[in-house]
Image (tube, rainbow, N blue to C red):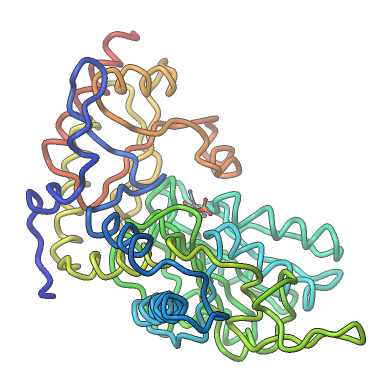
Length: 408
Ligand code: PMP
């Protein structure tokens, strides 16, 4: 497929964008950071799998079992190619959250000891904080955050100072789901590696904004969810460097993850199967493969350029609103804008905008420590996807301005 970028053609691929809400208003979907909508290519791929090839994988000797296995393992190869990894370094999970929990429960329990420090950042999603706190509570280790600067970028100087010998793992987000900040994870991982520190990168918000290559980043682990890359919910990925996975104990016990079971003792399969107990989310993996294929048909550079224009447009227009405070103004950010407006409740803005057809998210965005950092309890968040147009931005800004006017 040749990569192209044609916003009208892209929009036409999303059936849900023809939905109308509240008395026939066209849907303006500005919540792609929460989840991305599915293009027809993905919906068709999952339906075709279920209608034509569906069977359980790996164990069967019949035709459908062979087809389903080939497609499922093909999906793994597709994910590996997208990340610049090997197929045996790709584990299917339920999503980013499970990927973090998997590493915390296996590698974490195996390696984290009393007095150790797990270094995260103050801009992490709860999914990349709580599993580490659970390991810390079990082992006597502690979780320490790298501070975030006023513009929403990571405090690099502090990061450098904090990467000391007592750090067992650096677990950091690639892109913040609240601030839109893109962290220089390659540099952070290089600094960590020089000091022998293991690295985990949360890519939940990064994959939908362009190319990600785990070898270039140089991380030990990388995680993302299919539903933020135009694929289905309930499936995600954990990339683990081969040497890391090989030395890790299983996560859950059950079928598929074993080598040989007996009451005298059980031996386990090699990665990635060692970490995939039970029947996997087959339609999910097929849908993810289709999503990757579809996403790769979009010209990444053109997408980035389009998104930067939308971001500049929206930032400029929102800034005209009296009392507007945008939280996250780092020069290196994706199309995510969080804001509060003086004297107006974020939830009221969200509700009125919804009445006007504009879907935005309001709340703490599963990043309460970050809310504390900026002294707010919640923000309104506008986030762009590949379908977002300048007209969407115009309508969203208009809805926010109207809401503020009504609420004052
Ligand atoms: N990390 C980040 C940065 C996220 O934005 C999200 C989803 N909001 C997650 C982790 C968790 O992803 P999931 O709920 O798909 O497991």
